[in-house]
Length: 188
Image 1 (cartoon, helix red, strand yellow):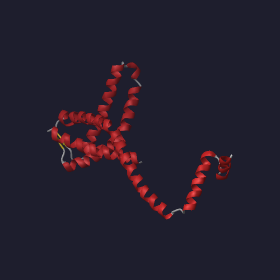
Image 2 (cartoon, rainbow, N blue to C red):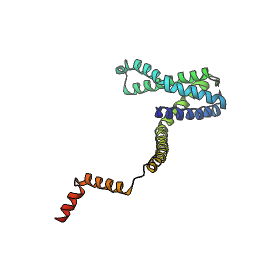
Image 3 (cartoon, helix red, strand yellow):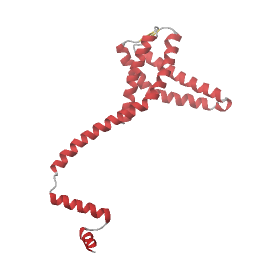
Image 4 (cartoon, helix red, strand yellow):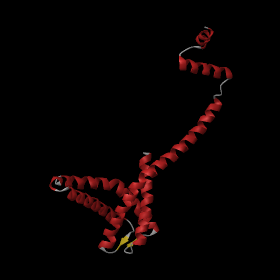
């Protein structure tokens, strides 16, 4: 569950940045700051929920005729499928948010290509983001359990006699001899 949340949040932040960059660098696409926040929600949900289903449907249809294509032809079909799925997601994002586009190529095709490049970059850094997040969460949990563990150990303070008995029990486990047997063996 935690990995899914981390992946969704990191994708959301990445989508906000990409949408803002698209709005800045492509004059035919208008994405404001507030619109980018909502559009990133739509884009993230579409990426996590709709994209896998669309890819399955399109790849399933393409797989039926895969034997009739060359390796290059198959790669081109796979790239076309990914582009079409991304185009559908971009159109949904435009329709459901305040993102405004002008022109077919500059408003739909070019942003789709930029989103594809952004997804490649995201895939490259996603594993690192998740690993770093797991490391941070693990250290926070260790600190929290360490403070709770020290409070519990203070409450359960042991007497010196009990500590000696614990040490003797640990030695017995180590070599299998009781303290009496060890003493007798030493006398021999």
